[in-house]
Length: 282
Figure 1: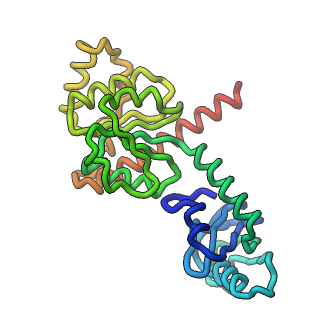
Figure 2 (figure 1 turned 60 degrees about the vertical axis):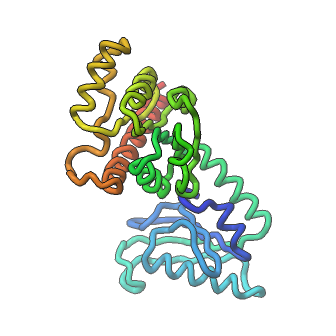
Figure 3 (figure 1 turned 90 degrees about the vertical axis):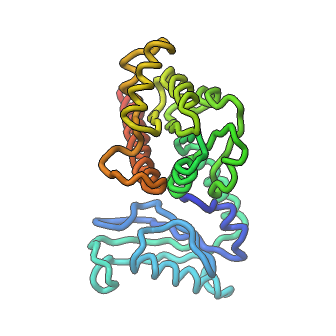
């Protein structure tokens, strides 16, 4: 179950009773694919099967089952997505609803942990205003995020689910990142930014390397990288700077974070596609 923010384990721990809603089959045009899941408790939900009237019906049915101890523990809904339910996708969905017992609860927590471990890694070097905003934006997305900082106070108040690392040598964290990771450099110190980026450019197996700044900062980095770090011009072409592009001129941290998050997700997806394609070809 691909979720973000609140974890499956936390949700189930807080819910005295819960139900698992799964798209068992999907035909034609549907909001979500077969296998999409959500959790339902008497007062909350986690995940989505696509929203709209279909999801409303599934939640309502799940809560009826949770409220009736003598009723069915499992139920299949067969729902045509037409005008009769106010949802005009035009396809047809079979939705399986199961009341969660201890065995299913254990299975869901285990599966969520395995899935979380497979998510792509995003390393944010810097916990300033933009670092906090970008961590908050990425916390909603299917990625694992680690914020690396030299200042303890900069790591305070990070969103739930964000891992933090306090270290006097943040550039060492570059080599610890897994293949396919995204690395975003936005520290409080330009010289430190340059050291981290130079270290990141030594790796050819990462999906994204970005540095906050301007065209002038990138030009300054290029000069330093070529003259002082024995860098290669071809490597500099892999550096995205400024992050988030230049289509939107608004420099508020939340805006930069939104644009950068979209850019990072696109890079991660492209890298995954390229890696999977190479594996199939091999």
